[in-house]
Length: 250
Image 1 (cartoon, rainbow, N blue to C red):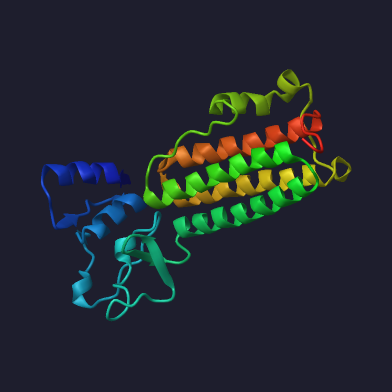
Image 2 (cartoon, one colour):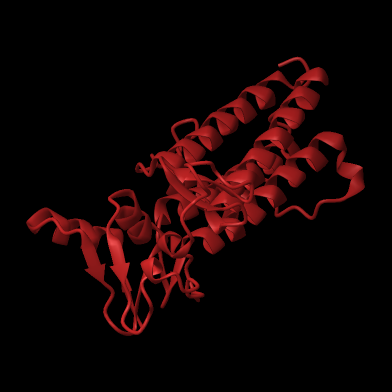
């Protein structure tokens, strides 16, 4: 099955605008491509599938969710309670993979804010500042996803994404501390950081559900890579805590 992307549709539309699009046999649209058509009110014609105007049921889809296959929202423009805005006027059901991803980002931000309060209340102000930088980047991820804009690469203390990756893989070489196996004896702050690390790993999985389009291809590879590096960064913070970089009162 061939995947038709938003970029492919944009190129076609730029050459000659169209009001309907016939989906080739054995092809499917990525969520972004589907949204592109929906926002321009371009009717998608699927061979062998009745037109929505016929009054027949909408077809079920497999693979990536295609927003244009949902029935028109409500009567008189009222939004049904089971649907929400994906972008602009585009509505999707509330368990759409991208909506789930946004919800998980929201949950992670809440956990992160709680961790910052706990860390700073115990006097670890430098670690608190570092976690505030993480919070700022998490908000950049959400903004880039919602607005469908490119996400800037994660940069922390001047470290590149590749350096963060290397630090997390070889902590003994860079910080004098071997790989950590979390345990209760490491204390509350380390436990808080480990919770954050595992939450980001779950975010990675949610991102794959939201942006995987099949055949080994993904949309928003920038977001998926950023989350991978973010989990590595939080692990590096754990290593630095174990190495004695962070001190109470500093």
